[in-house]
Image (cartoon, rainbow, N blue to C red):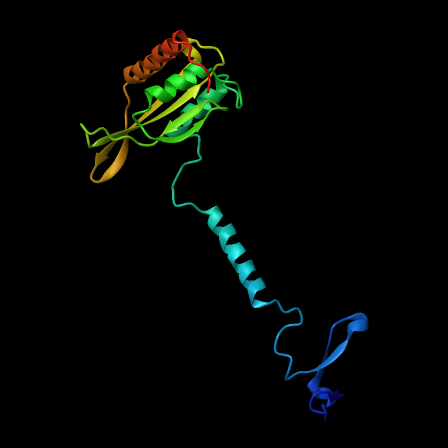
Length: 194
């Protein structure tokens, strides 16, 4: 076979055949330095970046527990088992009253369709060695006393680490009562859904 550019003949032992079917091509081995199905550098880079993004999506910097045995998730499991249905309509007065009552804490998430409000950890200025987190569940489309449930989490700092601490049930009841009082005042004032 002759090299068209140089007019040289290549010995058969120095040639390889690439391709398949009617597209067979004889090519000198010295010229064949890349695999048969070569991908361009940009294509390989795109695949590598995609793989890294997929792998990074599997990990998280936060250590949030997905286990329902975690005390912070037990309230969610309990509310679902006690009749709260995902996507159930929630009472607008209870929803707004809960947001108003917890407004001194920053929100981590608020799901108006599921009726769940989760705050970030709040550290009162008066007691720097403890912090609180609230998860509130709006359980009913009707405004009634059992239509809102609050889970309060408390941690105290010991030796530079945050440790779970018991919560006084009266504090939880007090927060629920404040939410209910605010909901009643919103209804009396004629609050309309925005």
